[in-house]
Length: 313
Ligand SMILES: Nc1ncnc2c1ncn2[C@@H]1O[C@H](COP(=O)(O)OP(=O)(O)OP(=O)(O)O)[C@@H](O)[C@H]1O
Image 1: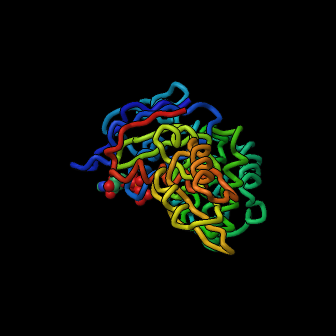
Image 2: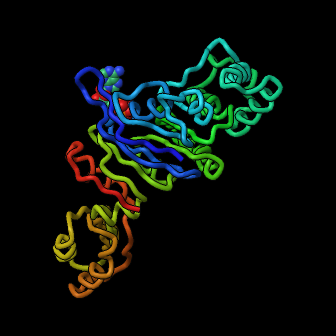
């Protein structure tokens, strides 16, 4: 279990994070969501034992990150925003070096390197110089170095940053395969990525944790969420009916069918359906919108950290 209590970090006069507290249970995959400069990297570096907090504490499986960093480092694997790779080494040699640094015994090193390469689909790159790797493969080596000592807890800072769509899909699949065997904290400012891979979200804004919970629960608590409908009939009437529920946008219009999105809680779907039918519109489709997480996120971060703290589960 990971317990973070009242974590604060000042850079000079500037507080990068303030009074951040959360708990992560074994086996959970947690998304750490925030805009640029929100304080994600600072928090993750403290959890990764590469930065000391100004105040507050991090306890991992009963070990305090400041008082017992060695114990904590054994239990965590950290992919920083820039992976610490040595260009002049081969992938295999680098991973073996990292394994030894992290205390893996000499006779186990080869097996652990092979295991980490297997997990990150790097087997065929074992003998390749790191300087020859594409950005996507370098990210994978970054994840492999975080896994090589078999830590229970993995911290991944923006693992998909700079990857192309195919590589992003590969990284998402990799994170999914780690689910169950590892506890994972993965940061991102890319919403769909977090939504697809994580069990629960921590949302940080202006250095403060502004919400935590499942996507469903946050949508419920914070009134975020959208409803999408397709209707046939009087266009102006459809817009008028939906505007009673929230801001409306037109998604597309084809063959007399109008697709619309309204920013309203998906719980209101039965009322929206009734209102459209009462207004004489032909209802073709009505469902929970896919932009749900984005609207929650924008609601939470719009006020730059002044949003009320919401805990939902
Ligand atoms: N070494 C540093 N010295 C001074 N200020 C810093 C330092 N590192 C970060 N900051 C500031 O602390 C705040 C939080 O930065 P942090 O890098 O933790 O955010 P982030 O959420 O990871 O952002 P990004 O997504 O852009 O990486 C920002 O205002 C940043 O400018």
